[in-house]
Length: 171
Length: 390
Image 1: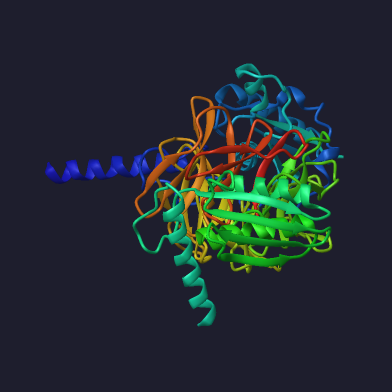
Image 2: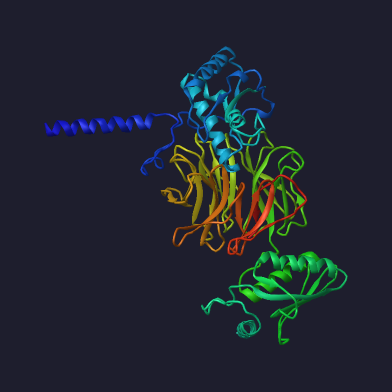
């Protein structure tokens, strides 16, 4: 009996670890053992070479599918997933076109960290699209941090509009 | 030997005169000559540029915070100078007429005045002056974030970029002759280095994804930065002359804002690997494990290691506002230096006492000993991300 209990405990611990390792886009919480040393969760691996200039991308075509994020988070919210399905569908219907995934943050927080956070949002969006079968060589990331807000107003409604990953169709 | 003897004698004379002539308190530690303010009077600055140099000198000495600028009668130290267009001849005496400093400085009256101010500070306090320091910063005054450099008193502003794109996070090399920064000139965030002597610049890191937050190692050989080329935003170093990056972190979060220890062995940086952005240190040699620096806030960013190695300054977020604070590394104790508003991007001056930071589009000098905060008027709006030369 006792050894059975131990086996069960070991199994549940293993499952917990496996689940923790698989839970996408959730930043480390609590335990000091988590995080550093555990390789990044991005499924995308090494990024493809840059193609073209994202300043020339057309962000109007897929504007309706801009993905929004919670404060200081790069998790893809369940409510945003249908937009990513739509982008993946558009990509399969337009095989010659590449996409610039432009990550943005709201104005709160500090400049350099926000450049990193914006990139992380673009990477999370890219990873999700890869999971839907999109071709990674057609998905370029660029972070603008807090530098290009879509709403320059104050307050949470403006902030919420600015925490986003916009998809631009490259020329 | 001769010089050293002279210097010791002068210091002794100064301490003596200060004890006689002022009511200020002095530290008992014999290694520290003067801790509190010295009663000092600028009795006259003559010459073709006398009026302008006098103003600059008074302001330099006031900004330093080591002096009580007072009347000749109340002063224990008397300062006078003659300023031509090119040079400043400065003399410092004590109340008895003993000459403590008598030197001519060159390089144009403004620079020469700053040199005189720093010589006064060094002679009277034994600590490095900051009047000859420069500040590089970002301003969106033109509608675009461009790089600038100015003297630490806010004068002598020069625009370094006219790219009409986004330029971010300028940082001086230790010698002050180069500035590394992030530019979106290519449409992507790349790391560039400007040579100030000839304004030449070159793109040194332009990998897929983000290239941002460059910081020169104090020994000048490396640049630490954030790259995402391997699929996540991680900390790397590259040789300052260029070359392939060496990866320092492996995490699930974002690493940003590296700053080096003065011996170039260790890097402090921001990581949100454990949920919210926090400070960590890691060996600059690849393969070590980051160590957390505890602060009072769950959102701590923008670390800057003091040139004497004893402190790391940073900004903390609380109740929607940002404050400037520092941690003393020997005991882990945190000191919060500002109270209201949104205060960002602290950068230590070479004194390891003064910081420059940004608040609501203006730049300020902050004395970490007195917490005195002085705006640095540079005629530009929408200033951010200051960095002081060392």
